[in-house]
Image 1 (tube, one colour):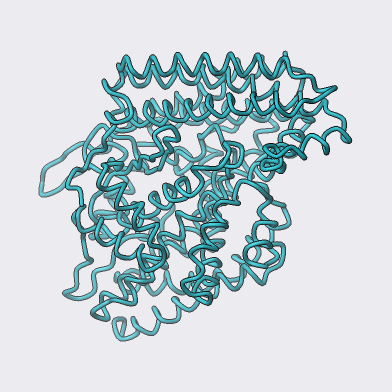
Image 2: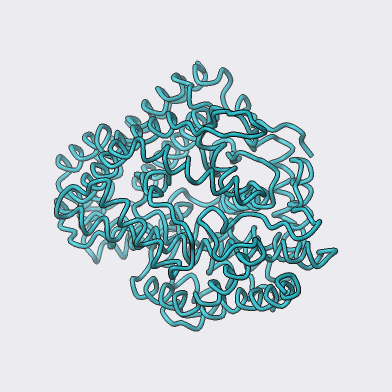
Length: 600
């Protein structure tokens, strides 16, 4: 196992953010984009030729993979050091490169749209194209909704200083946030990433409560700027929808996730019916903390029962913990994690200057991934690391597929990551050596469920209501705070003693430009993975291959068809969702039974 807490980026491009090697690589991407544009421009949609379309798709794949490689590198450097101005400059440079690629993609979709239906069916009979028939048909359907090539080009160019510009402003604002923290009589200043770990990871509830207060104040101090940013980001998106004739802001995220609204509604309805069980869990957790109700910062916080202290992990221990437990489900997952640690794919060091949060990004040219996080040794940190390695595994099993067949949507993107967490949490609960340890592990598991059922639901409710109001004009910071707190109270069924009204500012997910409604896919992925895990237990060792095949299909069919093909279930019905939730309800009952003696 590796003892290194920082990732190896030199193996991708030498020289850091001022790398000559990187700039030469970006130059080749520009050439590939130009060549791809020539190929698709010359392609005759009235008499479609499969071989020439395949030439374009090969060049398109090379350009996209190169863009992903360079972007992962540059954004990674900037995430690890928000003061790296050269990295920020390269990120901006690649945004322009990506805009050029988007122009090519627009032309590609509009060309597909021009092919007559009868000729389209014949075209897809080609040996190479048939492999991506679903994806090509999807692109063709998207092309039917686009404006003229000239108008779409204008939108892409304006988005650099509009949509993308708002995201860059948000990142700059977050980088400027500093949170005061007092420990042992000494006051220090924490970055947003460091403070976030204290907010939910510190074992002392008084420290967490105090941190929530100063955390809320820090974001509120810049609330007008965050409100402007969020309003203009949403406004740009809504105006684009309007120009394209899209009258429902939920349609684009549903289409992006290849998901029916009926499925999404069924999922949320089934969750809401089962929320009382999670409220029961949270109330018991509050009792164990000698509190009447949990506060916002207590939900995922560790327990301390009697003399038992929550287990903490060194980075090396976390690696062993993850690989050993991955092996209980899939040897290939274990081997992938071992490779990630041995080759230093993970940026984990707890230091100032890093952006908050965690993510996994793909390096398709290097055939690797990179994981970003700030590791502080808590069980939640270990789960986060496993989650991101699940993303890396998902990319790994799709490496040999055409680029079109690798572009899975966010809801199924969370399948492998969330299941990776479940494998570890279930195994550790079973292996607990004391009642206190078992309670602690179950608590961590159920806290994750509470986040998925309630925290994520509050984000979805907030964003829906914000977009509804934004259609009628700007939404001020006071209204945003009110919308956020109301959504949290509704989603948590008024079960908390404190809420986080400035969450709309502190949560990066509301400002991500590539994917609208960056919320419900997490809950979908969580329950979908739980359903898969439940199904896998009944199938035994043979399911490893089936699971791999399911992941490989995640970008090649609708979500409903994916579930039908690999799990034989109908996602528009409550049965599947209830079967997944039943796994959680079982944990709640065990938790309540084990903790009964601790609250008498």
